[in-house]
Amino acid sequence: MADLYEVLGVDRDANQDQIKRAYRKLVRELHPDINPDPQVQDRFKDITAAYEVLSDPQKRSNYDAGGANGQGNFGGFGFGDIMDAFFGGGGSRGPRSRKRAGQDALIRIEVDLNEACFGTEREITVESAVICPKCEGSGCADGGHPTMCEICKGRGETQHVTRSFIGQVMTSRPCANCQGYGSVITSPCRECAGDGRVRSRQTIPVKIPAGVETGNRIQLSGRGEVGPGGGPAGDLYVEIVQTPHEFLVREGNTLHVALGISMSAASLGTTLTVETLDGPIPVVIKAGTQSGATIPVKGKGVTHLRGGGRGDLLVHVEVHTPTKLNKEQEELLRKFAQLRGEKEGESQMQRHDGGFFSKFRDAFGR
Image (cartoon, rainbow, N blue to C red; front, side, top):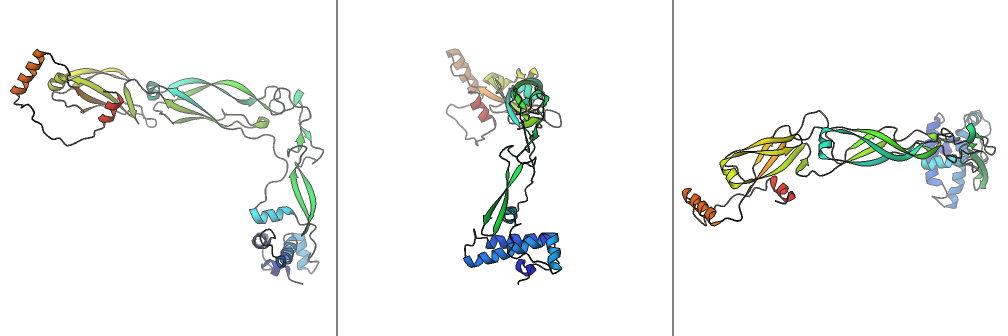
């Protein structure tokens, strides 16, 4: 008669973890579903019988003392051991709780550029699951409580014995009578039908911090859906969608604005008023300013979401060339060109500079 330790390929002083690992390894190799060779089935039965003895401290002690070796006795072998071998199982047993965590919820809200820059407060209305006010989450009518399931006696599962090529196999299944809860609600709450929660509209205040932009999410812990059975609520996420501004374009914490000026203003210089999030401000146009020039205005951009302070406003200048001239204007312009020594038809090649302003000029349709 083979030594059980040799059958599993472990030393006599092997601990329970080593015995279980050895058994799992052999089952993966020898189980009939994997290796259908008839000659292998006898060995599979041997390792199963050996594991049944060596995995039980009392049976192992008897075997080491010279008692029964358990060969051929498969009555106590459970299906869970084979499942453990294949999947590393060992799932929790016993009744499952009626209370389960609720789901997170997501809602999108629109804010304008001014609100995104300086922050604001909003009230949002959401419809979600809340604890049933009638039964306070128990799911039972008239202040009752779930009663123990008479089928599984509160275990939440029932055991079934079947015969197989390895003998009797005992399996556990969730109790069909109580769905694995171990208890039943004999008189469900009429308001929530035993779920412990109902749908309800809520108005929730939301503080939107300065500096948010499209895609940012604000987490409101515990303001999502209440779970079944009055379980803990999930979180509510508020996703920001910033609407376009009439003339300001945002890039991170920097704002851009396109400013069209006349040819004479660009040549002579002037001071113009530019609208910003802080109201109108003066911007100095130096004499000789070229189309495409950028004038930075410090601290007039968007508030930094973290750390405070603000970005800059970049004023992109576009010089407008007149398209229609009357005879007097044309003569004066030709006279001006002569005074500057400019020759008609004369040109000078320039290096291309695909500056940042070009895309904003397209955006503003100028």
